[in-house]
Image 1 (tube, rainbow, N blue to C red):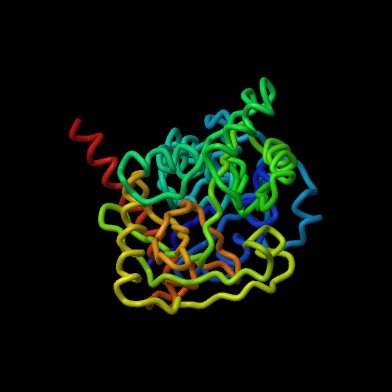
Image 2: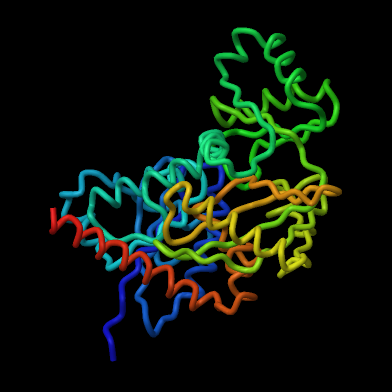
Length: 353
């Protein structure tokens, strides 16, 4: 028998998506094949302290007990021994996990890890930079404006006028660097714009104001390194006005059509654009690309990319691969293989230079 591969599952974190990370980690833990892997569970609390725990399945109250430690410096023997693994699997949604920070730490440690690298993670996390990049490449994104908090404080009335002059209602207002629909508002009346902007600035110093597309919400999963592949797309049918945090994680009333009922040419175009967005940010491993399909025109818009997509029981990323012929367990196998392959390739390149 082959020796078990040690996987360090890293979850929790400092972002507003802390609780979602715990749910995702539990799903991954359950679906990692015990005949192939030995799992080290590493919990990061909301203050950024690290601790090794029995598993992600223990109650949240227990996760918070006991002493944690700072992950730096790497030279600490106790840290090295506690967290030594063959591959690291960060399941940290949002800032301080999905934005390139943990990836940079793992790069410094020169260890294999699942998912996108520093650059792709940072671009994918920042919705403003992502949309700017896609616009430059001629990929379809909805009309938008990037607004900084400093602009808002200097002249809120002037800024409101600028938004009204460039974008028509309804609008979405969202933080540039957060996921799981945290801090997002749909604005249907002008009087709602000011409070929506103020709420978004509670989560980030930079926000997006963009045209709200009337139509269908489509998601597509991407898997791979240099030769990424796209899954069949799925459709999110929100119970609320839009697919917000409560709809995603609290109420459970959202419906999903997996795979989405779409004409074959539309499926192929969505898959093509999903791979194009993945490559645009130089992603690797995994990502979920979200789209709008406009009612009437049937025009496809790329909304955003998630480089550490949700892995909960209702999450689209694993579900879309399941209907595309790859089970949850085999998907995790593939992600770990991709992480190891990328690290080996990087080491070979460094040896050549």
